[in-house]
Image (cartoon, rainbow, N blue to C red):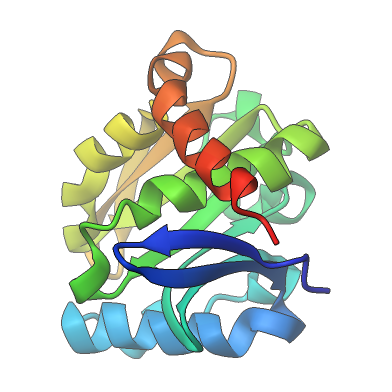
Length: 199
């Protein structure tokens, strides 16, 4: 299923956002991950696909027909086993959606696409489905993005451990927490812009 595209503005050019399942958007998502994680950042092919992708909801941003950014979310009921593997505290198990594999191609990383994609998560997925919590796992060099996620979503570290890329950290986002509320204005600003331009 693909939801109605939402039109946003990238500089002087138009772009579209699509939200859908793995059948409709999985090919674009994996193509973007391969370009960003493997070709641009040097990660191995195992960063391109996960066993949970088939259960995910994907967001893809296109510049014209070309995919330029994506993010995926796995519902809480489908990510519980993985949550246990990465040592997410039991209080969140089965209650937290998994935000996974945010990727933005290099030339568009200053276009606020990350904020816009989180706005779409908030408006089209988290709020309608009543998800209070979401978690992110950052592996290897991606741990350096922890301050970025903290600024973007108010996420806080709740666990850490080892993975094939060395260390990993687990962050939790609580939509009712003051840390989330403190960044919600930026998210809502992006959300208002995307919704106002919806076709």
